[in-house]
Image 1 (tube, rainbow, N blue to C red):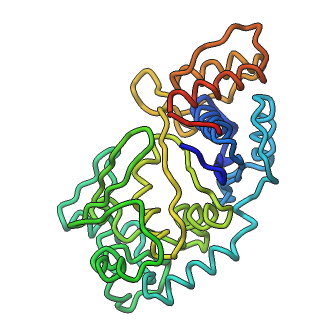
Image 2 (image 1 turned 90 degrees about the horizontal axis):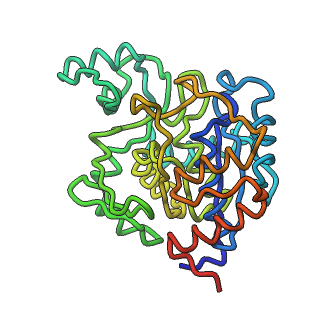
Length: 319
């Protein structure tokens, strides 16, 4: 596979410094871009400022630099791009693919329980559609994507689509190809339902921001952690509704804790120890099934060797 216009990205949320799991995603996205002779970008996803301690973004950029991972273009911050998200929301509103929601979390929980959908660990429950037919006197709190409407109108929507979609939607099942995991299937109305685009506090939601930014930055290939696979269907549908291009997706292995849970900031993952950058990179490379290199290897040489291995593993040809 060759791609002269390849544009990839690493998009960390600066809620804490990089840890072992986030380095795996950063390294994989960098290697894939270099294997394709492409461009690699860094985007700081600080869409939720209250959760982002001051200075953490600069710490992340410094950690990446210590690992030899330098972006090819200036870094962008989501907190500085609200105007773009407003335009996208207004477009969806004009298409009647976004509607106001007056539900609190307590309201949603009560509606789900009334429907017999009891909360289960790690199982996402779709929005019950309480405000889909109107607010019924409640004040608007947030805005939601009319996913169920978009899916139900799919044959008509597809007929008017300017570009061919790299996925299919039949009988409510969305199917797409992941470059590592293979064929993926999801029933988005059952998994997410009408998800939030703008929150009750006025901040824009991750799903809208990431889709808009990927399009504005011309991202052609997304390489990210396997825990984000379930987001792909929502993002493909949102891209389609906004008339945006669809990147190729690849989801990488996760770093797991001894109990099988994903290593994450929420679970107290320690910051990367970069006193010996190659040693830390070797750990990430093993997760990606790349060769561990000797301590005498420089970071630059290690990255070059891993690029060649990545090309061979994922059949990337360099012309």
